[in-house]
Length: 267
Image (cartoon, rainbow, N blue to C red; front, side):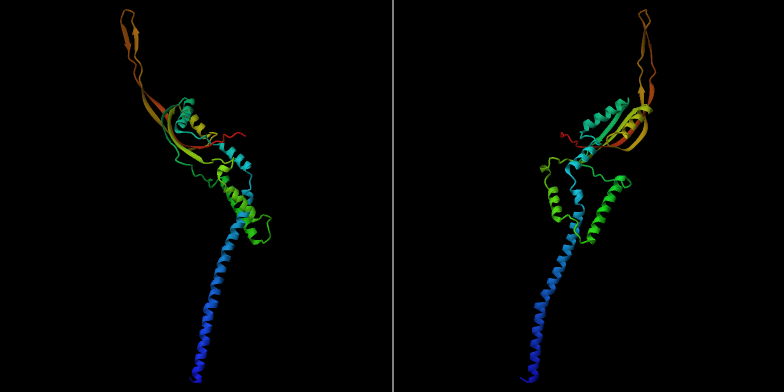
């Protein structure tokens, strides 16, 4: 083999060694770097989640007694859980108390709890928006600062474990679902009594939502009984009374009546 061929073989061997070194040495290192970067990204995301948890910790630490008292006060604004017969009896009694006649009533009982949310232009909606903005602002401030806030992630984990405990383990566990009963009823009577009945529904101390109402009339035949007069000579005279058409004012109203399970536990 000539000297030129020897140099060619030598450089070929050197190139092969370098190529194998790059493939088996550098490639695993690059894969390891990519894996580490992925882990760093996951850790940064988890860090953001943990900081949000820390920022909401004061809300999570609200005492059960305080929450229970607030729930108890809100319950008073709703009707107790009723079956359809009880709803019928209550509303019919309300109509009779205003000297109204109940013509018709349809009751649609709920198949499950009603999904309620704050009205867009209500004070509650504004309050919820402010609280959400405050939580986001606090999370951003903590994200920009590396100083400790005095609350550790272990504290968050403890609170989360308490919240994840089954409801049976807490004596203060309560059902806070709200159920909506839709009722359409038609009543008749004087204008004054009908208006008083509608006002009672509108101003009810319990939660009632007036979905719609309309005024109308009902025509009925008032049959008068004939009058029989004794003539005193063994004969009688019958005076025929003319029947009259009586027009009765009516009110047809559709409402949603909100119920929830009342707290019957003694203090």
